[in-house]
Length: 376
Image (tube, rainbow, N blue to C red; front, side):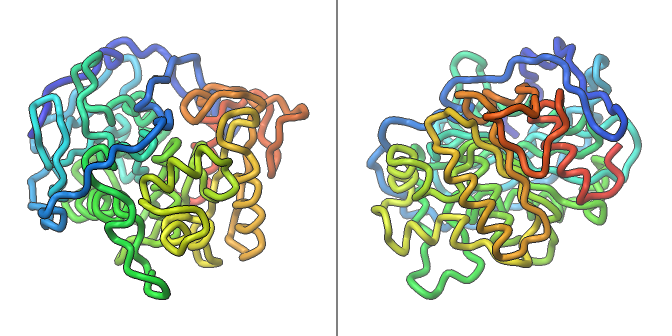
């Protein structure tokens, strides 16, 4: 198991907590990562293709049996990394080249059962398995503080590592052809995100205090939000997803602006207007039976808020149970606006109205709590 005993530097120093107040949440100040792996879109994709072993079946790996590490300041348990499989693509991890993928689990201190949230950080579709030399941990671990907040709010939170184009995994690898989409998602979602979810749910989640019957939420930032939306609209066989929440996830890529769409198309190895692009675009997969959707986008960021508005309008048109729009008055992107506090004043736009003073992160958690049980 890679880095199973390593703890990020923030773990013993987090002072901010989420406090339940009159059914909502108030979040203390905290700094979230703003570098590339926190959701920045790259200038161009790497051109290397996938290796021949890309269809390798994930191996079965046992979950940890030892006790979790607990942060005394928050009461959140950190269970360490768990290897959930291998998709056959190699990343330059902090331990060397590897195709193995992990997730990190956080759980509340209180006894379960608790609902589950799967979290996916943003990397501009590049992949989250590479090594961050500044922290000595893999890129996906930059999402640990956010996922620990979900655990503090009553969820068992699973932070998922995944591959992307930097590792040779492009979105069109799983494209089945026109008229044959079915429930297949783009490659990162289909080959990494869904298997991670399936592995967690099939390997004694109760050891973490998780109860699938309490509800499953998928949450992501930037390209990770795209994966969250795709997991929600294509589903996980044998399991029910209760809600999806995303920050700056370009769920309607053609409406996101020329540059964001071009980055998405590089990952999908296609061009605007093609069936391949539509296949990987949540907008074209959304239907009435899909879970409630939380859609956030900075009002002045590089991804046009028009894409969020168009997606929510489509969500309402196809009569999904709930479609929340959040356009904070900021130029920040994804995790960059996690601590933004809604004011209720124009030009900020929220529908249904957000509670003034609530942060985007707290609002996202409050949204999720509407559709699960037992989160305290």
